[in-house]
Image 1 (cartoon, rainbow, N blue to C red):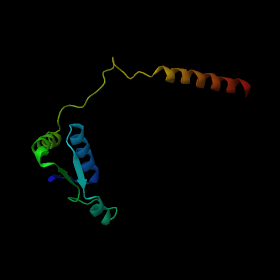
Image 2 (spheres, rainbow, N blue to C red):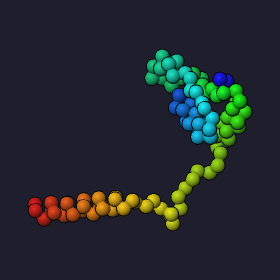
Image 3 (cartoon, rainbow, N blue to C red):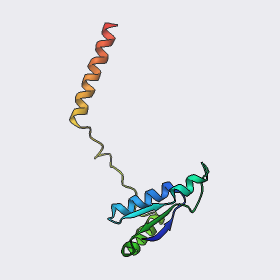
Image 4 (cartoon, rainbow, N blue to C red):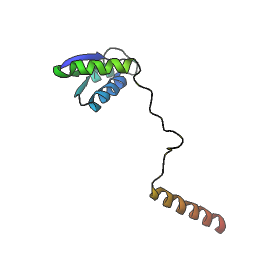
Length: 106
């Protein structure tokens, strides 16, 4: 494996590794124990990412895109919205019935 990136911290390293893996590139995050050895202080340059040598070029390009900000974030339009599954409506109905019944009894 070839080390291709040094992240600011272990969290960023896992974010980048997840991005690489979502593109089919196996990534290894190193430096977990080195960072923990310093305690709770935010340390730098301990978290590394390594990939197979044949994936290094593609991974480098993906990381460069990540550092430049990449595409605009995906946003739902107001027309699309988020739709609750039918089971959620049924559950909500029964919660309203139960609360109403409790208010009437009290």
